[in-house]
Length: 144
Image (cartoon, rainbow, N blue to C red; front, side, top):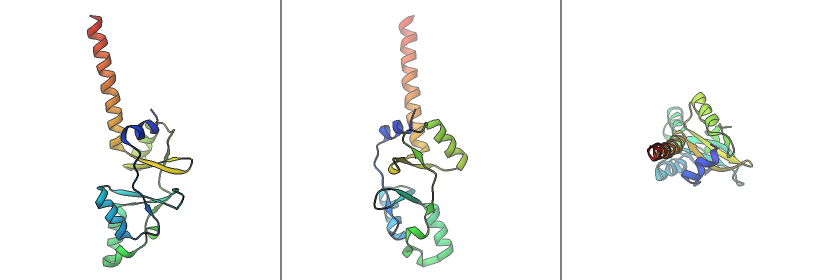
């Protein structure tokens, strides 16, 4: 199974933010969309980083009250782990486990086209196994 299959199942809607946005703007997007991280993109929709809830906590810890005015470019995680739309899902899951990350931005021709999470992959794999199980049970019961 390819990453493309996971995106096809879950949808390709991506909530992203510009690197010049403030942390306050990023927090608002995180809350409004009920998500834990934001891909940071340039004007050509190329991924330049990722901003997460952990980054908010680090900023608050180090900067205190004025952290909300900081630009995303100054506090995002640069060079995040990514995958390609044609990567094998099993390899991406191994990478997620190895690097202790729950979400991976998906690229196609260096452009951001989606984000997949551990939960997205589990759901697609569960649905696939359930369907296969139904077919096998139907075959077994039909053959008796």
